[in-house]
Length: 398
Ligand code: PMP
Ligand code: GLU
Image (cartoon, rainbow, N blue to C red; front, top):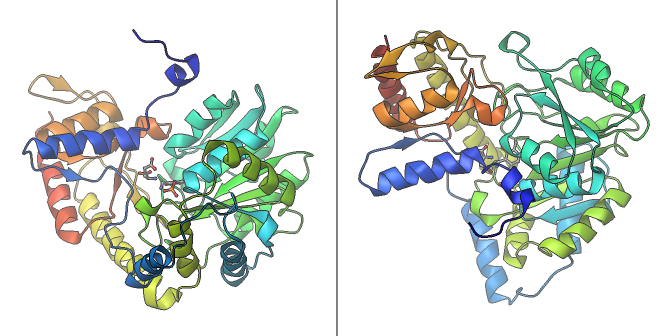
């Protein structure tokens, strides 16, 4: 066995990426897999963004930039925060990265020491726990359920805080549950945060524009919170730019400087071409470019919700944002087909991959294996066919 660090041995492979790889392999071997595993818009990047990138190449915008992104880009991001979220950031408070994933990694590595406690409402996004492991943090999980639409309350948060708590990390709109915190709920959370010294929040708002219940609410909007919050955003989801690798962190200047230092050792800036593309994205007209994609996601959500209702034993909330369903499936535990018995979400994912040829992700990756997650960021025909195949496969379980 070649030598590997304990660090890498201790973390798990990203389950979303692992399932996507598995379904690609099966597809390559000729099996007709419908992949609902990876949360990735099927839309193409708007032409105007692609043109900006082509122009950047032709203009030889091809040198290293400032690690945090070139200044005019960061100024455009500040304008976006003001316009969309009523947040007053300056360019020194912004760090552009290679994706929300890197922005979160930067924030975790800069805010957390070995042994610090980090509060993570569950279900959580797949990478949070592994990144915390890398930082040596102790995750404190707050479990939520379908009955409370998977949201934590201020009282639950208060109860979980100890003198060792440094950070809270969560997403709204939430991946995997689609839950969206209201302004009032966020205000109550911010009151708890502000009542503790040296307590910070990594607020993952990457699904900001994929919201079906009104305007996005940022946690940093409340008085005093800008100093306490790393607001995470990026271009992957709303602009259909997953492969471009562009992420954003906005936070207090001391944190932005620390993230710049960290990123300066890991990757430097993201691609200069991507930065030009992001610059155009920040200035896009929402109604013209983003809303049509968001409306298509909403239509698909409604379609899938109707189809799920016809599947016995799938219990789900109506997601208010993002593009995932996270059904509870314990009804099927103990049921078998062809000698294979379903005991948890991991078994269910394997079963649906083998029998229905539909790829999804076990709930275990998000903290609860009584669930499975699937993305509806694909066209309606695919969704109809996938749900039909799943229903047929589930009917075989006795
Ligand atoms: N946070 C959440 C909640 C996500 O679902 C994802 C997946 N895209 C990310 C962060 C990372 O996004 P990016 O592609 O910008 O790294
Ligand atoms: N965020 C997406 C998901 O949850 C993409 C996968 C990833 O970045 O890990 O499926």
